Image 1 (tube, rainbow, N blue to C red):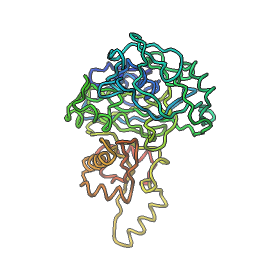
Image 2: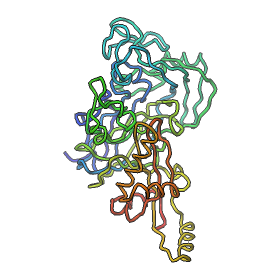
Image 3: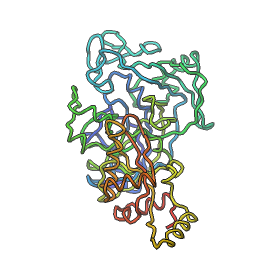
Image 4: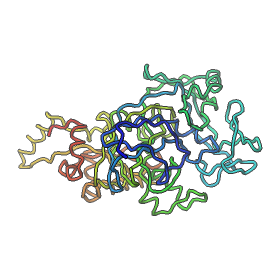
Length: 433
């Protein structure tokens, strides 16, 4: 089937993603995808029938993509559709899950797995088991907020109790859920523990990437959350080999995966299966509360196939302003100064370009080590050389606690040319060479 120039996708999965997932498309090499994504964390977390921790879009196949290739996903725009969001620090409800509250949910009273439910009123006990009537959400919110949003103004502000309760009574309207979303909007909790807090809207995708080569809960397609699946006591357990080789780190929660960024993702299943979800209105590095402002969003991306580029995890080319200071691209006047100094000492400076290699693991230290290893393998260097280059030409930034990092460095252009991504990087950052 020939690839389409544009694929519109407002279909959500049931929370499980992998080689058995239905795919739309294919989209042509150079084509575009419009994703309408459902809010990610909290709504699916409190919905007893959802098994993945999120609702992400059904994957889209890319024409000609095969395992061992890569796809470059250029984010053209991210539009906030929700008029309000809610989030906060979570705690689990005792007895409401088996091993993993995001995945293996059950009613804490009648023990029905993934129980059918009904929503009665508002508040943290509003989601109830249809069979026995008990509160059935696996999560409570220890400290949380409801925030109204206005993308035209570029800001959001948290509201007081009365406004939060009014929003909760009309939660579906305020959240603007996609047509086939099955989640309960977290707005029904009506949390208002810190009214009057303002923030800038800076939307991004917490999930963007390619389909993993094993069927797993969508929120666990990452080195930190994925680790919980190894020999887990529920049907979605995986082996350590699956964990190390079949995940694609699509769940990054890196706040630079936003308009103007390019994500280069590994292809591990036929067709690649690009999917998106878990959009947020804003987030600081680390997502230290565990969650942030989940929103419905419309995102437009452009897809390019890179044949023969085998990756273990993603490469990110963030907007230039998001790069750490030492990793920012050289400007023409700066590079002239470099050449002048190098010439005095009989040195030919190597042309370089900034890249970010994503590292992931159970902890931040594990993630950083894995990022160094991935960069070393990708660039044909020792881990020690990578660490030196990161120290003087880049940085390690926290994407998400407990275990996603961005390893930034200035990589030799000659090496990027061998990988087939030099033109992409040079054009993206308008380099002077």
